[in-house]
Length: 117
Image (cartoon, rainbow, N blue to C red):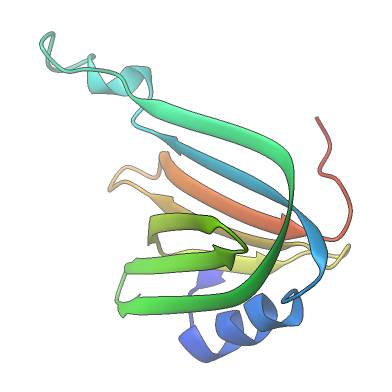
């Protein structure tokens, strides 16, 4: 994956506007939250192959703290903490953010075809 460049990622986000797409959204601090602090709570969210159509997409931020919002007909899909991206061989837009040790903290992926599960 490469560091996010707003212009390149915005172009890819816009490519999916008004199309029915599949979204993968995942956030986690995983089990590693409690490895060093027994009072820490593990949190996470996971949704895979949610079929949505978004009417507007925007990426904002600087450095390794980008936010992506996808405006739906009656709501939003939102991910924060993204820093890396790639377009895979299937045309799937993959974005992720990792902690200082390289562990996944957030992922947002968009595709015109379902993701493997």
